[in-house]
Amino acid sequence: MATVSSLDPGAVLGWFDRVARDLPWRDPDCTGWGVLVSEVMLQQTPVARVEPIWLDWMARWPVPSALAAAGQGEVLRAWGKLGYPRRALRLHAAATAIAAEHGDVVPSDVDTLLGLPGIGAYTARAVAAFAYGQRVPVVDTNVRRVVARAVHGAADAGPPSTTRDLADVEVLLPREPARAARYSAALMELGAVVCVARTPRCADCPVYADCAWQRAGRPAYAGPAKVVQKFAGTDRQVRGRLLDVLRGAPGPVSRAALDAAWDEPGQRDRCLHSLLVDGLVEQTDNGMFALPGEG
DNA sequence: AAATCGTGGGG
DNA sequence: TCCCCAAGATT
Image (cartoon, rainbow, N blue to C red; front, side):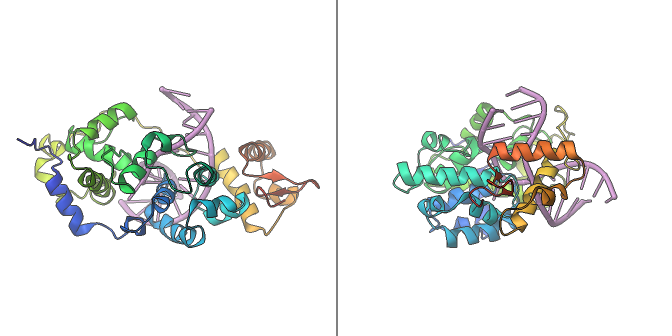
């Protein structure tokens, strides 16, 4: 009758019931807004760094309209050093749209969510599933890796393809929506704490016996080489330095203060310009520089 | 569609 | 030390 895949829901969910981390956004009483904020913060940022900031945000801005009423600079300061600060501005813009166009309630429909700034294929489905219990595939880097190993017998996932990735997981989902949503959370947890990228803890895996990668003798990764993201010396580092100066100051700072953040003038100027273009920095009337809205 | 965009912890 | 990597989105 029921097809038993190498990622059997019974085994995965049973494991999840026992060991799931007690994260605040997993509280059954957590609102759709709380889930959305957590998902955006968790884009490329580890749980341990997100948790304290998320708690702060929920206490300060418990509904979308509350965040929408805050200034951009205030929001960027509260974002702190989570990284990729454009996410903070997009979340602020999403909150504004939700307050104005959706009655201050986070939409539950995937396509509507996809129309909000900063919400893509993963985040839209994560909100639909985790906040509203919908039966939609939720595919992040963890799920891609777990499926690559357990189902396809590969050491790691190849290049992402939204269409293929969603289809891969769709066929695994239990029929009942709430169970499907919890299954997605469990797959993510499995990838996050057991089936990790570098050194998987296979001895702790609930589907070890069924894992296609194990059965194939743990072949090495055969896909195309992954792009290594440099950081030291890149514009990303310089932009971070510049923004850090502005976050560390109570108000507008002089050009000289920003110049001290990086010694190569050409790169420094290029990065400052890009920050202005991105709306992460503004120039005041008297030639100072400030976080947006704080000049 | 490949490149870009922060930051910090751990192997 | 250095390098990998972490609940992606956007252009």
